[in-house]
Image 1 (cartoon, rainbow, N blue to C red):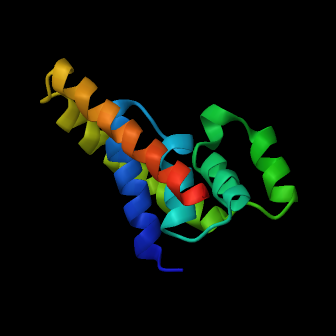
Image 2 (tube, rainbow, N blue to C red; image 1 turned 30 degrees about the horizontal axis):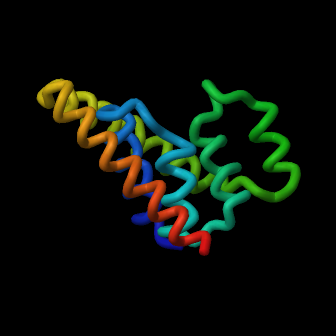
Length: 120
């Protein structure tokens, strides 16, 4: 797997988290599944490893115990999400609330539609 993919996932999820306040379940898990080719369980476990401090060690350990965490990918994504979060927050402060609500709604519709379409 190309580390560039993990860098892109981390950076883009950080930027969008800074703009919309969203993260693992909405961004990282689908990106790992559809871009990096991870299984859903591996994507969830790796996303939890990215978000470990706020999410909780117990969930990550359980996924790890079942072979569903890639710590190397999680470290790269977390590093890039830190940088991306700062960039996204700077962008967000330049966007008015009305436009931001529209952007967030369109993003959620797109992601939901894509996931429903992909599941069929």
